[in-house]
Each structure stands twice: as structure tokens, then as C-alpha cells.
Image (cartoon, rainbow, N blue to C red; front, side, top):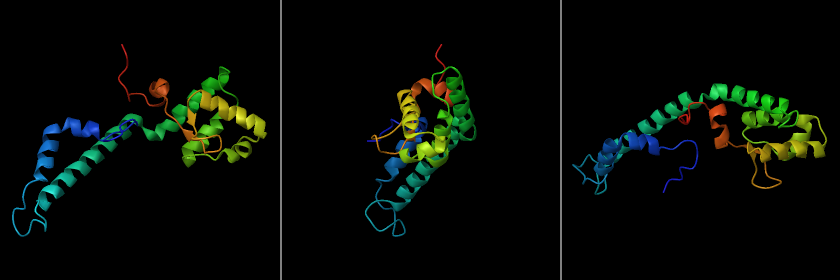
Amino acid sequence: VLDTGGIWSIARGLARNVRSYKSHLAQCDLPRRNDLDGRGNLSEEGLASFTRFFLETCLDQVKFMEELVQPDRLRDRILVWVEEEIRADALPQKAGRILEAILYRGELPRGDVPELLGASDRHSRRVVAALIERGVVVSESTRAPLRLAFPAKLASRWMPGLFPEQR
């Protein structure tokens, strides 16, 4: 069972090519054709063909998602959103520094936040709490590193085109 709870899933690519997918999958169960078709009872050529199809589908879906998400522009979209939220007093000053650090590093140890913000531990905790409350930052525990979340309510702002617009 594939957990498709994330943004990307191979299931979309397989669903788009369901006939080819089933055909390649069935070829994996064919008996060996000759002495050059692997060593087991089943066709190694069929398995190789399925593997090639699967990897090509993965690459196609990665390309599709890259065009959709435009990761080279993601940082700018997130930082514009943060600045708008700060101006509206919905987020504290310097909240953008935390998001930018997480975007750059992948995750941010909580102990690095005060130095990053040039602020006290207490103020740093307030900024982190505001980001967590908005759903844009997550952490497995109060001591675990901070990671970026992609809340559905911000999908159209952070990743326009990812989901069809509601009419």
C-alpha cells in the first residue's frame, strides 16, 4: 500500500498509463522465454521492461510536479506571503527568517532560532509558536527540529496551479 498523503505520488502517472502499466506488470509474471532470459522461472526481460516503464513514469511525474510547483520560485512566493502576514500583524517580525532557513537547510534545530533571529529565547519561542499555529511549520516534539509544512489552505499562494481552482 502506497501512502499518497504527500504532495507527490507515482499513482497519478500509473493511472494515466493504466493499460501500459498492467501490460508491463503482467509481463513480469510470464515464464522465462529462453536461456538468455534470466535464471529464475519468470522472465527477466519482462521485469526489466516493467522497471524501465516505472522509472520513466517516475521521471515524467517529477518533471510534471517541477513544472507545476516551480521550486525555483517557491522561496519568493513563501517570503512574499510572510511579509504580507507580518504587515497584517498576523505573524511576528522576523518570522520570514525562520522559513527561509528551513527552506535552505531542510529543517532547523530549535536551538538555532534565537541566534538566527538575534532575539531572546522567549521571543524566539513566540515566533516559532506563531508559525506552528499558522500551520506553516511543524515539529515532532517541543525539542525536535522545525520543518516546513505545506498547508492546503496556502496551496494556491505557495504553489499556484497545484490544485484546480474552485469555481
